[in-house]
Length: 252
Ligand code: MF3
Ligand code: CO
Image (cartoon, rainbow, N blue to C red):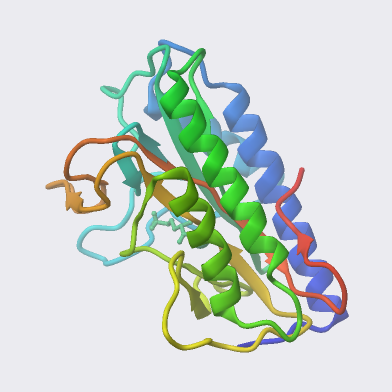
């Protein structure tokens, strides 16, 4: 559990802002008819122009490194969707783009679920509730609170919306590395967890589903989807715990 000094906080702010601008720019390219491979290509180009290095590209094992510059998870895909020429967006789809970069040696990580044109009321509500849960979790990221306070706030919003919470993936500390301690589950545990202190930087990332939260791994070794093929949502911000209100670092 690392607490950042002022210089490091500034570095995290810069990395967060770059990640957020990139996510917004890639999101602006979403339209019916575009493939996730094309969006990945846009991501690669924009990261290069920004001087940012993809945290996802070649992440994981040497045997099966992640091949994309960001993760593109469509409809029933929860996380780690691999970009493909064959995955073409259609009106009514929802697409989660998880974009993390290293910028000047600090990492910024953020995710949004985008609507492709007009989506069904149920898809729309799922996204709305996930965004609400993320903000509720962030509001609990106060010095003196515990990790479980964040988890409980996220869980409460999900359950009130009637959605299932994916348990296999959790939020995380973030800094020079993309994944640092502590883990931040999107559901409560019996322990309070780590006590939050000023200078901790955290990636908070709820994932909910419209049906069951059971997951299924594709043969590609990355793509994770709902077993019942119900829609999934994923939203994420990198934040900084401060002496006062939490600071959202991944705002453009
Ligand atoms: N940004 C994701 C996270 O929050 C990780 C994606 S990188 C991948 O943990 F290589 F695993 F896809
Ligand atoms: Co993350």
